[in-house]
Image (spheres, rainbow, N blue to C red):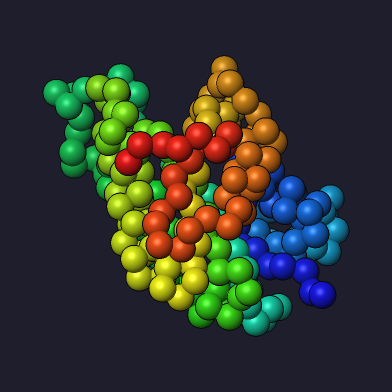
Length: 232
């Protein structure tokens, strides 16, 4: 049997890199969407192919699809990990500059980035055996357990991603697609900072353990990296 195939966005460092390494170690053929041109996966051998990708650009996403299609006729998994957090966590509405592009940039990456990738990779995913999509979401996108007073752009972009997931389940679930949104926890990363709770390796292990399960095709699965259900 041939190895299952996956495309991972935001694979340069942190959680994305850990996801690529762990998928490769589990026998997957992985295409790593990288923003930095000098990202190296030599330690993973021939199981990983780096593919240039800027999820903010439709042209870049289309080029990544073409580069992937040169190696495989199908994908079993699209894992949308690319994300940014540009807000000041404690900056309340009174002080937010709605014209500086900070909120808009987070929507472009965190919400529209996954949508661009799903749309353009859909032919390869439809040809795959398992038809899985995993989006890295966040508890910050939960309306049911919202507690922050700031970080408007990040929270709203992740909440919109969750709504996107429910709509795509309604559409793609009829074709047998399984879509899971995973909150990876507070991890040591560029976004989480150096004092977070867990490492990228621990988060990646949980994301794959729960994200690759046979979830129902008729509803969006939204859990954290330990499998705990999250409130929409």
